[in-house]
Image (tube, rainbow, N blue to C red):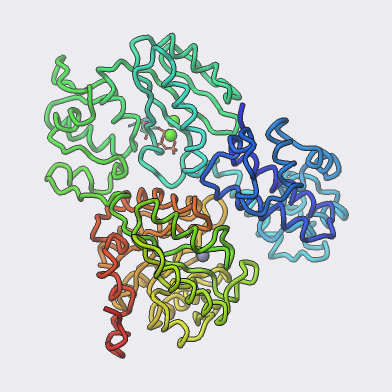
Length: 586
Ligand code: DGT
Ligand code: CA
Ligand code: CA
Ligand code: ZN
């Protein structure tokens, strides 16, 4: 069974963690694994395939001969000698502790040495008995934070990022569609609605021979456990831990089943009520008036039969879409093909993997007409951020490339770091010379709400900031959004003519759909941006577009659907216009 990219990433991250836990003294060794893991996770291609074809893994970035050999070993055996050796040396419960806030390798080792703690259970017990704060380097505050984090984790059921879901889904759909008795296999559930994370996958297979489909389904290689198996339905857990619910339906019922299993629950309840109000019954098999089945083969027929327009899956959350479908007011949602450019991307000048030219060519190959190059500013030392001099050099290089390349325009930009007090990491005179300034928070996520909000408001007031990047700083399943008064921030952005980003990295999706909807209502333009750190990651835009659709955004609500000529004035603030209207490019 070929491994997924996430498996290779997990192995390298585990190696890095274990090296740290056993007290590895060479930081470069640890960093090499982390860097390679990051590059692999942003890779737009399937690593197992690259390895099987004996392709040059240098292209992934940060992978030399030694790490390449490890990857081949992992591809062949599922593990490698180094990893096995480290697992043997380091107590099994320690790596899990590293996922807690405030617990790094040093503290984890200390806990093990002083209190012999070797699992989360033991840690929870020690923390709740008040034994932790006596250990050097731990205080009462950290002790209670650790306790809270363990408890929060236990109560939260495990969810998956959309990319991980897709890596599991696509080969499985391929397997199901290859079964001779299958008419069609499709995905429903939260994945079809493109909810930002999914709990499990819900798959519908149309076939008139359910037994044959079931027999073949459970032979799928990636299945770890079969939880339940009936004649037309089964639930299994895949090796990565993702559950799959599968149902086989007759082709003439597909529409009704698809509506039902796409959900959401709340949407289903709302449309069922509409059916009932008209004396009809709606369930997973069809729409019925008395005994007579009036619809069910297609989704359109189901919605039409109860007086509704077909509702795009991304909107099915009972947030007003049912009423809009009844009155013909559903928005025409933005599509990937509507995007004319991308306004947040990195190159190997900071922490990206590919060159300026490769990023430009990658954007052009995707049909984009412009790409803003927004490498990090200097304060982000770990990301090799640019200082004024290096930025000036990049600007010259962009001029050269723009003169040379047709059908793509590079915009000169920066992702400037927001300092703790809301000032920016680069001087105004430099920012004023750029086409676009994306300002983002990369530190001090934990400020109190009032302070954090004031920090961001100050950024929105800044005359040269075009776009606030990943506004809440959340990392899905990893880091909560910053405490912010988003309502005030959106209102101020509207006032200042500042745009807000919908960062399309699948672990960010920031702003989220709810906030994007509020932005639209306030008249704030949203920049759907890839934040690509490699050419392949320009494909992230797809995830951002899906969230924008969930927010009900149309083409006009999105900044980067505009042709470049209309873009220039929107990248400059209204207050800047007032101050020096003469400097705007036209
Ligand atoms: P998830 O898996 O937590 O990300 O979210 P969903 O929406 O995929 O939920 P899931 O997998 O439990 O069920 C898939 C769909 O099936 C759900 O969106 C609506 C439908 N469904 C399942 N059980 C029920 C139910 O008891 N009542 C109603 N109205 N719909 C249900
Ligand atoms: Ca589901
Ligand atoms: Ca399910
Ligand atoms: Zn950033």
